[in-house]
Image (cartoon, rainbow, N blue to C red):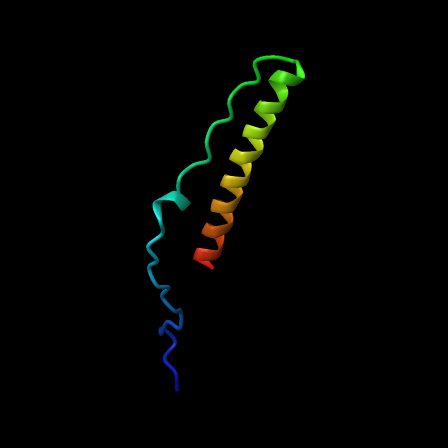
Length: 65
């Protein structure tokens, strides 16, 4: 017979995560103009920041799975 008060849950291992994976995503800089010369460099910067944040988020998700 199995006692009714036993626990069958497994404890998870403690994982040490690299600090860059737990850092918040950077703030986006404001758009300071409405011309193409203003928008294009701003948009490229936003895409770079997004891609970096998405890579770190994906690595964090994979690390804790």
